[in-house]
Image (cartoon, rainbow, N blue to C red; front, side, top):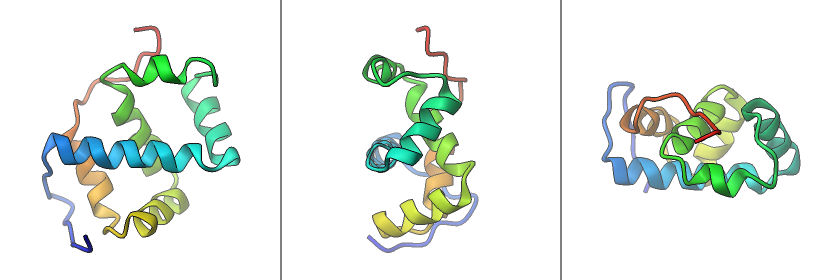
Length: 102
């Protein structure tokens, strides 16, 4: 799946959601990274599943990854994709702010 994606690349919403779901698994696999995500998102371990049903959750996951360059590069390497795909995935998803109360 090694491909190049320019900054202006667009992806289907389905492919973007797949990348975001893989990003969530990547975050959850590392306790320190998960702790940072929970702290920054304001979520607790007990309400992540509920929050994941919110359509704005996956964009928030990608926002977290994009805000941390080391995580971005590590995720891209793990998925064997160009890091630009992660930014393209974020742009392909709904652009509302995540509100954990919904």
